[in-house]
Image (cartoon, rainbow, N blue to C red; front, side):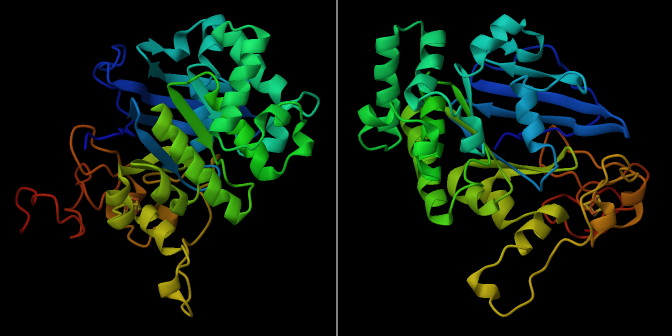
Amino acid sequence: MTPLITATAAPLATPDLPPPADVLLDVRDLRTYFHVMDGTVRAVDGVSYSIKRGQTLGIVGESGCGKSVTALTIMRLLDIPPAEIASGSVWFKGRNLLCLPEDQMRRVRGNEISMIFQEPMTSLNPVYTVGDQITEGVVLHKKLSKKAGLEKAIESLRLVGINNPERRVKQYPHELSGGMRQRVMIAMALACDPDLIIADEPTTALDVTIQAQILELIRKVQDETGAALMLITHDLGVVAETVQDVIVMYAGRVVESGTVDEVLLAPKHPYTKGLLESIPSKGKRGQRLNVIKGTVANPFNLPAGCNFAPRCPYAFGPCSTHDPQIEAASPPDVACWLYTRAPGGPPPPRLRPHLAPLAGEPS
Ligand code: SF4
C-alpha cells in the first residue's frame, strides 16, 4: 500500500501543491500546540496522513495522544488561542482548509465533512427535537425547504435503523436511549451526504451490545453512501472490525501505519506491540496480562530522543538521543530505531527482517 504517513520534522518537498484527485484528505506535517499557564503542549507534532475517496482509516492511541485534536484541527473547531495551528496543511477536495475564510469553512463543516462525537447526550441540544436538529443542517447546507429538510431527516433516521422515524423526529434527545441517540448523531452526520465522516470514539459511551450494533451500522452506511471514514478510537478491536488502514499515534506523533492486517497481525513499533499484548483474550485466560509500563509522556517535559523511550523494553543506544522519524518514501512505516539506522548510530538490532542489511553489516 502507499505509505500513509510521514511523522517527520522535515518539511515536505511540495507542501503547497494539492494532492492527486483521488486523495480526499491530505494532512501534511500538521502541528497543533496549546499555550497554557504551565507551558506549551505539542498536542499534534508533525503528523501527516491521507485518505482516499471511500477509504476507511482508523486512528488509534491512548488518551492524550493527539487523535481528537487532529480531527478538531481539520474541522477548525479549536479555540485559538490557547490553541495554535503552528504549521502544516489540510488539503480537502483540492482546498487547504487551514487557509479557507470562516464563511467557506462553515460550508465544509457538517456538509462535506461530518463529525460523530463520542457522547451523544452532550452533543445533541436538549431543547430541540431530533427532527429540528437534523433538519437545521440540511436546510442550511442543501438549501432545502423546511418540509423537504424534515423528509430528509426522516429518511436519514430510517437509514440508521430507527423504527417509526416519523414519530421519532418529534421527540427530544432525553426521550431516546443511549444507542438511539448515537444513531441520531450518525443520521445527522449523514443527512448532508458528506464526503468524509469523522467518528470520534463513537461507541465509547455505549453498552457493549449496543457498541456492536453501532459499529455494524457505521460500516453499513459507509458502504452504502461511499463516504470516506476516519475512525478515532483507543480500541484496537473496534479498528480491526471497522477499517482498512490504521495509524497509531503516541505523544502527538504517528508511530506506525499500514493496513489493519499489517499493523494488528504483525506490529512493528514497540508501542503497538504493547497495546496489542495488553488486550485480554480467551487464549490468555489465567495468565497475567502484559501492560505498557509507566505512563504517557508528560507533554510539558517530553524526553530527548524517542518519546516512547522511558517505557520501551527495546530501548537502546540512539533512543535517548535521536528522535526517530518515519521514512516518507518507502516502508517500513514505523518511527523506531529498531528498523532504521540512527544518524551515526549503531546498526539496529535484528528486529527488521524486511530490510536489506546496511553496508558493512553482516546479513
Ligand atoms: Fe523503543 Fe527506541 Fe524504537 Fe523508541 S526508537 S520505540 S525507544 S526501540
